[in-house]
Image 1 (cartoon, one colour):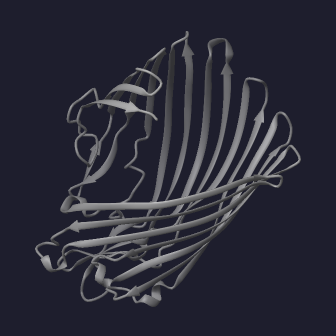
Image 2 (cartoon, rainbow, N blue to C red):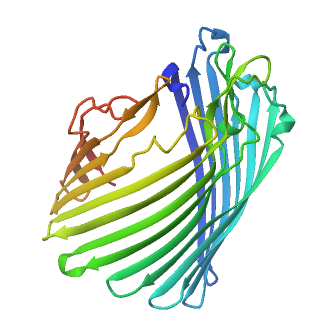
Image 3 (cartoon, rainbow, N blue to C red):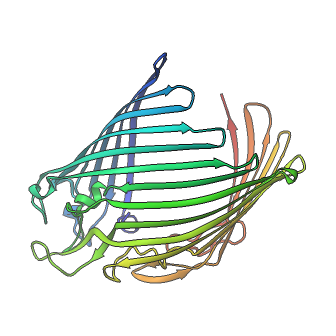
Length: 398
């Protein structure tokens, strides 16, 4: 949120949802309809320009979905769906105009149990988006918002159960990240003569993910081990670019747009098991080697140096009657983030969280939770320092 450091906000959120489903001889039919309103009032002085303050953001989202799940024989399961989504938001200040899009989507899933050892699952979703804008404009004409986007997302997986204790999986996914209304059409003054601008010509980001993993169950030790390798390529990633190129009215824009692509090579090792009757444990390590292709080093979002290469977790759990307890230790290696307009390094961060609970009866639970227990006021990133916190809670279920 570009305004958090410079403003106070008041939020009002409300939503409505209705669902209907029916199990028939022809499968499960389901319908879903929901509507969300999010109103945000920004007390943002804009460098001493009270005439442009306060800002008011009004976001409205409505989604309607129909789906049908059915089987053909005992080995084939299908799901078909159709969805309509409309999303609307005003610009900032609200007097400038409104940006909105409508999305029509159709999708399907096919799950096939080929044999007792082999199964596969495929899912497709096609989406067609239409963008439009009304009202006054700062940098772009309303006709430039009359654009459309058509994209296909995919999820596919193959599972081979080699033995009772060995499982091998192959997975592929193609994900689509459609620009938000902010990235499409925000027109907001940050300071006198400086505007934060969306870009109606922004393209969706496309992320392809390939993964293979192998899992073995050490039955005699009540332990499971999994090793995975993956490759991911992401194209047309959206970011913010500081440019001195004036688009309109001699103003300096700070632009959203598609400014970089990225590749990730990585792997993960995961171990988890149980000790005796009451104890559980887990160890996890992941490696991510990121290579960015960036149009310009002034691009705000860069992943190569701004994500940890090494991440590790250790977990210990306890359960005995009404008592439960958990410890989670996390490690993240060095990464860079922007704070106050400069690049700062953070990392080699250890974080310990804990929780102890006691069930008084079936309905009442007492809990004590500790967050960031190793260090108080730890500087872990560009945001606020992580304070050591302890929470005592009473939960009642009815």
